[in-house]
Amino acid sequence: MTILEGQGLAAKVAARVLSVAGTAQKNKALEAIAQALLDRQEEILSANARDLDAARESGMRQSLQDRLALDEKRIAGIVEGVRQVAALPDPIGQVTKMEKRPNGLIIGRRRVPLGVIGIIYEARPNVTVDAAALCLKSGNAVILRGGKEALHSNMALTSIMRDALERSGLPMDCVSLVASTSRESAAELMGLTEYLDVLIPRGGAGLIRSVVENARVPVIQTGVGVCHIYVHEKADLQMAADILYNAKCSRPSVCNAAECLLVDRAVAAQFLPMAQVRLADKHVEFRGCPETCAILPGAVPATPEDWDTEYGDYILAVKVVEDQDEATDFIAAHGTGHSEAIVTSDYFAAQRFLDEVDAAAVYVNASTRFTDGFEFGLGAEIGISTQKMHARGPMGLEELTSSKYVIYGTGQVR
Image (cartoon, rainbow, N blue to C red):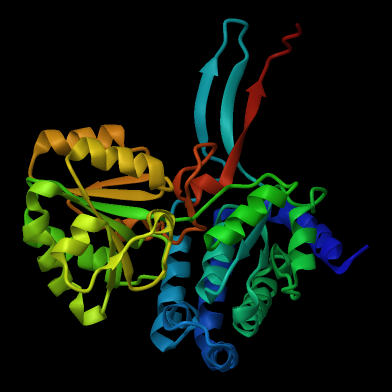
């Protein structure tokens, strides 16, 4: 048995215990984790400093270093996320349907955990805690496999959580970390069909594509975010500029950041200079269609690849469109089903956009940056599902459950 198979077996055993743990016990464990993270934050910061030193030496770009970095404020935010998950209603055991059949059988559906969840993710150590907290509250054991960039941070966080679990009376193997960040370990995890019930990749397009193409374990696809802001001809242009700034610049490295701006031709000459001025303090590079380049000094001609790129940086693809039909056609061709937004004061244009755009989250007059489990009232999230099977959008507690039928009889036979 390999090391990873041993982790899988231990997680499967732990999952049986966790699946019948009561809400009070799970909440006790989550509070123990939250407090331990606060008490041992110097240990976390020291490990994170090692990761950041390696990131700087390797030339990691600044926006990705920002995703990797932890400080006292971010640790406090992670702890608050754990406590918010503890405060959420427990989905396990909820009966979503119950009816009596003509033969007297009473048949119901009850929420149950998925079992053992594997999560493959990149350089965001907060995911380590977010994922563990959500899996614990929803009764699932979790095997985490982070990227090499955050290995020391992830090892520290996981060790702290495992210690807290043991002190609270739950198996420490409810949460475990794959210590190897080699391609071989990822490949083995993707084939761990005997122990994993589902695999969730969280990261860039390359990671998600690799998991979807190579995994033998069922996969919930998440996260690739080529998100658009569409400025309609009847938009409040100042509102549009403010929404664009937030969607592109507040955290350009995350999957709900805007990557492409679409502008109706009727307002392009007025709006694009406004947008350039609004985004100037972040030195955003505009990669535009010929019309955009004619309007904006300094804009770089866009290549066909730019329309399909998740930059994760201060780069924005820009296209002038004739009307809403062209905008929605463009989104259908180049969007990734994550988050799309229209800015307009026209009620009927807004409703058309909501009806016609196929994405997990569709916005009217708001930033795409709100596609987030916390902002949607779900607590932390595992990721943003961009597929249509089982779960779509922010994956909170309910999305980490399945169901089973429970049947009450009085001696019926068929």
